[in-house]
Image (cartoon, rainbow, N blue to C red; front, side):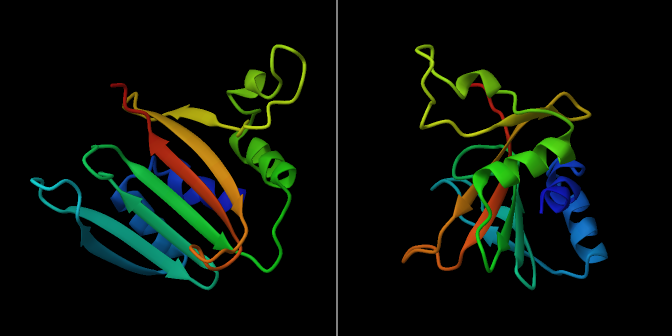
Length: 156
């Protein structure tokens, strides 16, 4: 899963043409739809690519914010442990999370709210943050899944 996320989102820097090309190469069904963003803005494109147990999405605008986002959802029969996914991403990305120092609080106790996060810089200097979530099926999101996300960092 980690290698596929890197292939779809990280190596393409979340760009629609690259994500679409990888999805086509992998035999996924690809469609591009208009999504509503802000009230007075024109709709934005969202690429959706899907195959058995896998959905990839990409857009360059989320709500009223112009930033690239690329997500890969893997629908799984058994949820992996967070530590297993983190270890796989460390191998795929070549290093520990960039926020590793946040794992433990200053008082030495584990930070319960810690989520590993990597940052990568694109060819044009754009900075992206990478995260993952292991998500149990619930009434709002049906299906156990591992969600990987790449999001452009936009300084306000």
